[in-house]
Image 1 (cartoon, rainbow, N blue to C red):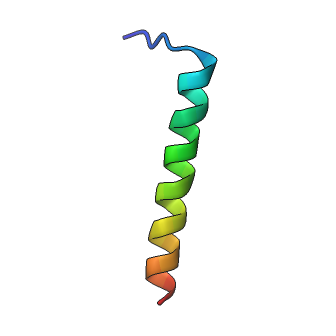
Image 2 (image 1 turned 90 degrees about the vertical axis):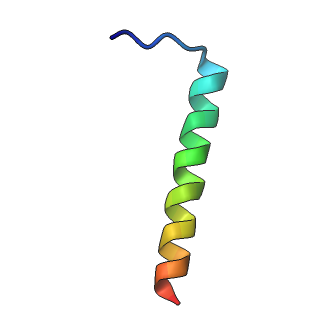
Length: 30
């Protein structure tokens, strides 16, 4: 399986992962 995506899509994917992780940590903190 080969993943081929542009740099822009890759950056957006990283942003989604970062935001998702931040939300999980913030909700867990409370």
